Image (cartoon, rainbow, N blue to C red; front, top):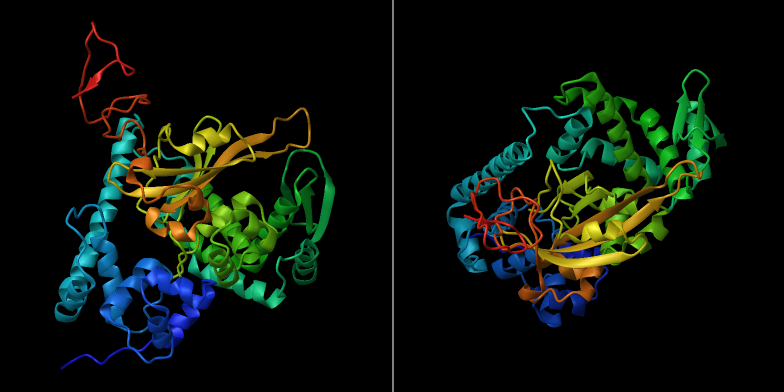
Length: 467
């Protein structure tokens, strides 16, 4: 029996408006005429396989709705787009026939690909550990917590929704510091003491006295975050305890760190509630400075929040995010893309984030290509956090945010790059020990799985040849 035609005019119109696009701009993205798009929005035409495929390709946040075949089509297309498959991607009609005629096979293929990706990531983790000389599972508590968030997809649904509900209840954007302080006082009996703590603590809570002290040198965005963190700890205590209690961590210190991390997550979700933040981010094409003004948050906070937008049915553009210190250590990391970071040792020296550390308050952009052929648009900015005292050095680091080049049109920082020119991409890798590029002049170490040959009579930039 022939499957009924699907009409989704309301969903397409809502998607266009959430994305801040006119009909002409959206039609151009979908490679359709304006009149065709208008007919789709008015339910004068059904969603064909070609249109469904174009929607999934151009808008990662496209919700396939209740139709399981549409969801299956999107998942199958995403799996087949992996560089693992060297052949050209199947046409929309071929994908549609596969889903319609062999749905069970399509489901199994998608699950197999997901299992392969997880296994490949675990193998990458082991290779990284061995190549860097890290014995056994000697992760420190904070490394365990970092990996827990990565494995959770950097999205915690229960906390995110609870924080969003509270933000909607308070109904203010950006959320004023005075309002957060009022809620702390009225709901939890917490008084705020500000501007007197010179010990270096950013936040100190005296439970017995119900007194919260905020560091004197903190900028306004950090003060608001510290208040939001304390409110999250008290307001969402049960939800945080339930999530942390289910985590398989080895030490009490790791569980405590996870609880702190979950409160930080909820604080970010409170200051940047999911629906509002995602809508504004799409509307301004993820312009970080504009998002900072709209929500009263810091540059790093906005970047980190963009990497959290992984809610099923309402995903944002898949980004990677990381923070790198002056020594090249990656102190925060998450990737909703195929890009994975080195867990041990330094990152690729050709990556723009290293240059950004040395040039604070300047945004640098880069088109980069990984060894698997996937290209990424990266934005990096060096930041300096003042200490408030000459006797204590300020913190210097850089944050980086990026997406796959397929999403460049939604990332304002790609406008300065020749994304369509594959030759303009800088070849980078995960780390020198894992990178297969033989001719890289920036190598610090040879690949861990390859031998080397040394010619005493010949010296190139790298003093050996990779076998």
